Length: 358
Ligand code: NCD
Image 1 (cartoon, protein in one colour):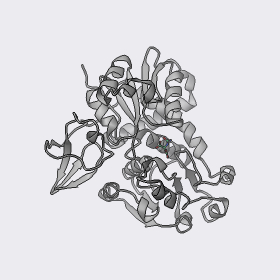
Image 2: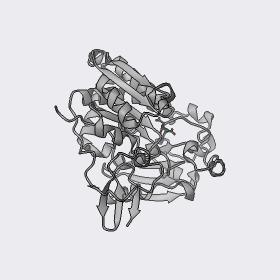
Image 3: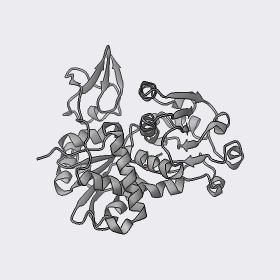
């Protein structure tokens, strides 16, 4: 049997495959009826261990619009997870019922862990504060449709850049297109993780770090706003100290170019004033709509075996070393092989990308 192709990290798939998905999503938007029965007889399982509105419903709608069916849960407490079933057993079983699995989980590396033993393709719909590749496909389709290009863009990212998985995946993806530059707007506590900054630099791209939206706005082609991720903070006090630092309002929008577009993966909390919604440059609701089409294209590509990905674990198994990130899946699911990429004295966990100094 052919090994299934998974989508865990977009960067495990080639840029030309992303571009094909974006092109297919465009074709689906133009002629949706052509694709209406394309997944008849196929079933998608959605396993959501963490809350979701857009990702879950856009995946489900995507499959229904393609003529397929859906099973799954959006609250693990109504499944055998509540009886103590481990991730491996739950996902293995559902992968035998369904043709494709979409999984969201609060622990980093969880989708990769599930994919190791699943019998069908697994899509990462968000693993803790780590990655969110299908939001990135949504963002790339939005940029391609609204800006007409994925290159030569100055993109500002504002908010919780430490815990925002959409930010991490999009920065890694946009680093693969020529001429892009990044302006990272956050407090010192919520900066982009070092491994992402290293990825940007290794791709030959540059970034600048700012504290305020006012400094950054005049320079941007795209502003990607994000909420402060309350659920990922160690204490309520730490969240309270960060929560209202950034708010994009109509006054600040005056500082930006007429060509700027404002994106947000949503949900919004208070970081964009509702008054900004009426500005034609505010495209976040349209962006959410693009998400459904790109997920239709992704499901089709994966079920048609039109995609290939790199092997899930490519490093070395180091039995006596454990990842030091308490939010890494390998600290909860103890049976997982402890697999790392080695670079000098540093081991990088293959589930969550955390670094351990030997
Ligand atoms: C994001 C997520 O879940 O990471 N939402 C989404 O999928 N559209 C952003 C967030 O929760 O802040």
